[in-house]
Amino acid sequence: MLVAFFATAFGLLDTLAGYLATPLSRRDSRQHRIAGVLLAIGLVLWLVNWLVQRLGGQARTAAE
Image (cartoon, rainbow, N blue to C red; front, side, top):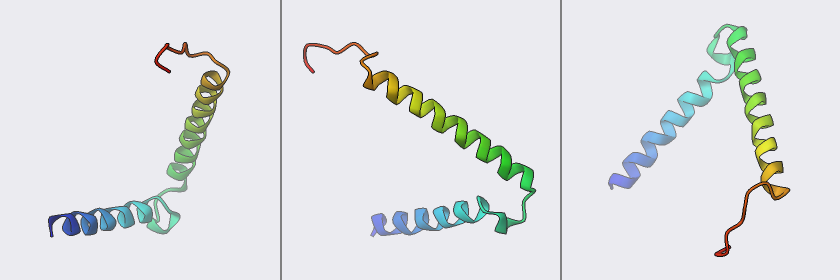
């Protein structure tokens, strides 16, 4: 019962967050551009991290 309550509550919060992240919320388009730039920066940092780890930049232990 409690799990169903939290699942419903989080589902509603996700819907609200999704709405606020779109231009339908009538927020200033400048905020959407800033968010896009921040997402792009995050994606680039993730890619750099992935490449460094993939190319062996992280020392492996004997347990691995």
